[in-house]
Amino acid sequence: MSKRIFEIEMKVRDYECDSQGIVNNANYLHYFENTRHEFMQTLGISFKESHALGIDPVVSRADLSYKNSLTGGDIFLSSLTVERKGIKLIFHQKIHRKSDNILCCKGQIEAVILINGVLSRGDYFDEYMKNYLIES
Image 1 (tube, rainbow, N blue to C red):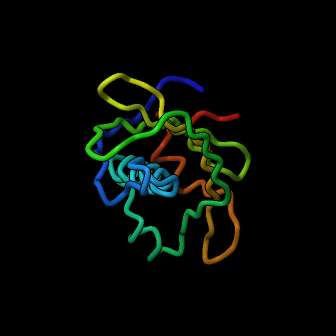
Image 2: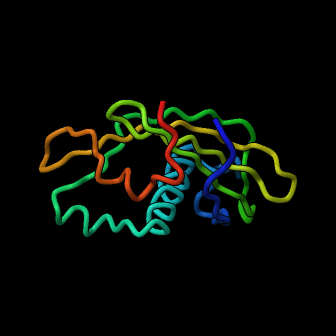
Image 3: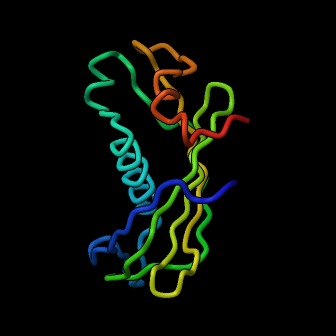
């Protein structure tokens, strides 16, 4: 996948860690979701407004690979690229610890678009993402 098109900095909160002192695996899904939402907001997409129009993006698949652990207080960079593959939007996401640029987690998150509850290609979002979307 090509270079990062969006990146945000976040910090691990102590309550996100398990008894071993490392980030619990489920929290990486939260980090990735927050990154996608922040990306969409920078494009001018409001999930509340699109929902009011009956347009809802939903995650249909998440595939994560854990590489190195984050611990409480770590600052990290969460980035993404996005591609269109048929009816799916595929977000390729990575988390790097900022202090040493070590890859901690990478994931591929697939989303589909429902319009009034019916599966759709979701072209609504393509116009917003036209400068970033990779068509495959």
